[in-house]
Length: 278
Ligand SMILES: [Cu+2]
Image 1 (cartoon, rainbow, N blue to C red):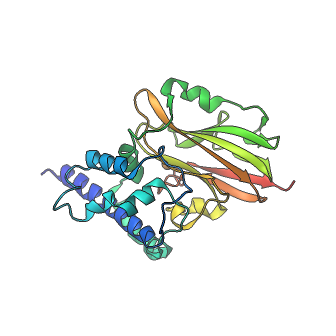
Image 2: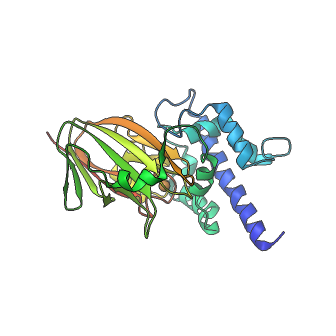
Image 3: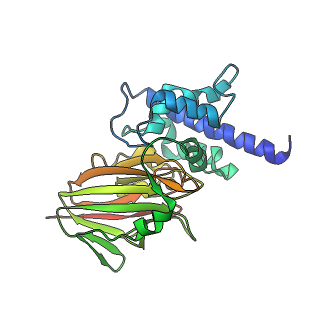
């Protein structure tokens, strides 16, 4: 085995180990399938297991060791998204140290693995040809002011595209990571598109401190009920996964919208979300 192959094997193993530990942590806290976070379509457990089998063949059967956890219900629940706070294993300086050791030292991006896992997941798709138009779309009832996307009425539909360019960004109404502004009580629909051909991305609205965390969703719940898409698989040659979420920005405050995949918010998939008093 070449050094490169050995490195890849080690990286994959450690990524799976991370999924294992996170899934295990959550399985101790969750007694039911989460009804909150939205992931790639409505994937059944059997469909999920089948995808794991395709991406990680040989791990499903006998002698699979730790990686068999990836096909277990706990890992499935985590992959499907949850509003539960993850186990203390992940939190604090010690947790960060472990995460960095597992992922950072190998230069790996967990989003690449998850993006591949969910690449062919069922669910709504947009044509890749449409992506530039979707990212540039300024919806009715929305005004662009400098680098701000201001929702004027009591409801709006925003299209958010996770895009890669010179820098990762959420493209909203033609702006890269704009500040999104609305009044308290606004009912927002977000059509989230993952246009990245290499990695999974998600979209959540969370408390301000979340974007400074390497593992934002390990510690934070979304700020508003329903304001989270956990993962969408990577885009294919001609189509990109789409998820639609709806939530009400109930409480005035300063929030962030960000990608919950570890490291992605810091890499640029992060912006301000302001809810002003009525
Ligand atoms: Cu991401």
